[in-house]
Amino acid sequence: LEFRRVLFRSGIMLSMTGQGSATVVRGGWRVTAELRAVNRKQAEIVVHTPPFLGGFEERIRALVQPAVLRGRCEVEIGVENADLSRQVLINEAVAKAYHHQLSGLAKALGLEGGVTLEALIRCPGVIQESRTDVDAEKFWPVVEEAVGKALVSFNKMRKQEGAHLAKDLAHRIDKMRKSLGKVRGFAPKVMTRYREQLLAKYRAAGLESVVATDERVVN
Image (cartoon, rainbow, N blue to C red; front, side):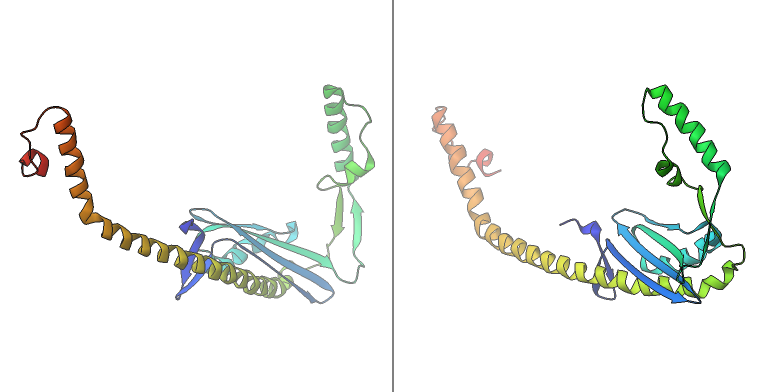
């Protein structure tokens, strides 16, 4: 059992790994928070948000920190317009820059086929959502609620996995105790067997005068 995968909270065993998510819809916007944690010796919380919510990273980290004492936890915040009326913009200058760089790379590597539109629209910054009329600060209560609900789901999974780990740990400890009892039963016989084997070697070497009470055998 890898003990570092487990944390203890108020007598409850929590797994260091876990995942949880939640979605809150309010004011025509859908905010999704997703938490994923993996094993790591030190605590590390990495927050990913849309650019216009970048100012919330420290606040989100402060919400998650009490639940993550060790391990690497990634927090992903997604925002969508729930009524699908958002305006999508194409950044032509960014697309041209990507096309120029990718075309040069393809030529340098001897690749054929050229740069496709499908490849370009997947490049970061080519397609942008117009949110010039959105006050980012108004999103905080929704983001806070989504992160809080995701934490509940996150800790529920950690408790479930922790319960399995606790059961496995208890089983292993029980086996160790039983094995220790057997070792204690064998212990008194070990020295006697060792003396007998050592005396046999002395006799085989022609040292018949050596007896079990000889300090070379006793010690």
